[in-house]
Image 1 (cartoon, rainbow, N blue to C red):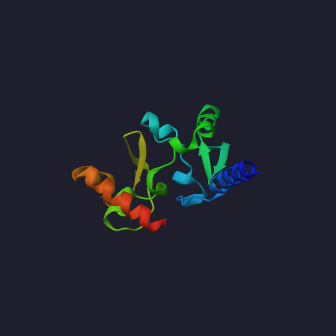
Image 2 (cartoon, rainbow, N blue to C red):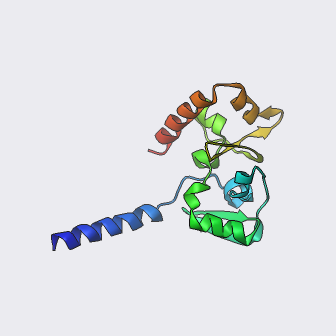
Image 3 (cartoon, rainbow, N blue to C red):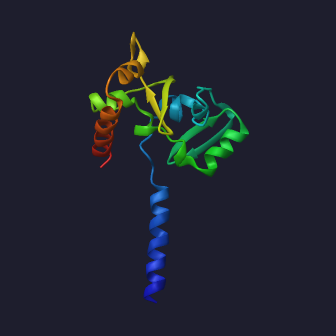
Length: 148
């Protein structure tokens, strides 16, 4: 009986974790402003289609093809942007959630980083001009504190 109870608690707990909403930037109603998060891993920023949509972690995603939608559904965690899809540079240096330009991104260590790029300020350029590993460490700590 104890084993059954422990198993039920473990299973119920797993469903609870998966059901929780993630803190994702949903500017324009979609993560990455409706760009296909799987396309970034081919070093392309491609706008998603209304024909290929799904929800994950309480947020909506668009994809440019059925194949990309299926890739995401198989392993959504692999395609989620770091820091919830907010500007990585702003998370690191300002400890703030700042909107992004979905065309300004970097794939590093098989992770997607998105950046602000407007009004003459391209934070991807600033990110790359600095100690990226150091900025990542700061952003990781700030993001964890923001979502504690």
